[in-house]
Length: 606
Image (tube, rainbow, N blue to C red; front, side, top):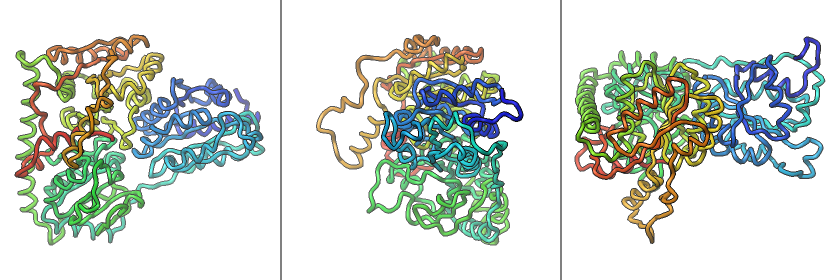
């Protein structure tokens, strides 16, 4: 313990600042250089607990999950060059998903660095493109300044990671100046410029076929009610960007058409009939795998673009915006919606007709998903389990639960069904990443469970290929008895890559020279329940569809009792009917190749 007049070491000052930012956990893999800092987490007055992991990318993913669900910055402690290199996948995911993290990296002794000692390198250069700010401390006296700057940056948009490299000798030295840990907090929720709001309202009021495209900036400020009011007023379809990290619109409302498809051609099919698009909080503007310059920009060129965002870099980034408004989304939308409603060019009856059409098609979509659920619940159903049955079974069990659920999704092949079938009560009841680097969900589940505690039931849906990245996450899960239900969809292949190959063959008329065995996991086959058992986690294997719902219900019972549970679900799509389509507007277009759309919908990261 430190007395009132005792001089604090560099490590004590770092922990003072973490506590001041409300950070409860620091996730990491121990290295010699970090021992003084980790030791500080054993001092109760700092209120920061160290959570050990078996790989730095797990630690970063856990910090990412904690930050998203706690509403506070996450913290990770990593070790010199290997540790820094190991975090890149999930650091990229956090950067692209606007998640605030501070990465504290132990560096070699400051007086030795010029001699290129073991494990040392230019750490800032390694991470710089995936951080909002990165810096290597040059003296112990810099620590208060650097920590205040780093945490200040984490508390103002855009919310992205920062990185601080700390030569380890500074952790045990004493700064000349001792002062309390204080962080500048910038009041940033400002309403957009009135003239810009009026101009945006005029464009949207005159639109004959408006459409809304939502990004994670909407979920970030919990703007569901404001978007719903705007969509109702305009009678407009609502899409989300591909691989959104949040649920940016309630999936049970009729205007919701799911995410944009991951190809230029697919997006043009979805948006081609509209005349005006309103991009709200959109960061991920080129989430496509296939693109040709001769076909124009990713969003159809004829669309009049209106943009609202709190980050000026994301406004007009890739295409000209007719009207652009900088401001807080939740504060600005009510004023903009009011302006549209009273604009003389706004055609209320036409908007009402659009609403009627959307409502009718939405009812058909609900009926299709209900029919699919009933098909799989019927006593005479097939024993084989298609992948999209899993979210349908979760949704059926969800209706019996006495707590809300939070879903972590890393099975991109069934992303549309996961987003449509399950009920979400808030934007952060769903978590994915916009980065698309695999291996995020098992690590994220650690931080998410620690952040949520017993308030919600946490379920992680993950493909077998993604799960194999970090099954050693289960070591930390068991160590802390984190109640997470892991559903591993085991099909012995990289399903999204197989789907992507099919789309490439269709779009480019290109075919592999030989059978793509490298996209299948094949032998040896994995039993994820058996793998979990080596970490002391209970689980089971389900290969018969008649047992799936019961197994999932049993899994929820286990986690409600405070323990993790793993279900290895043997996936076999043969003999199953096609999954219902979420984008009912696209489904209604004449001449649409539904098989191609289904394949595009199942495409994940390349």
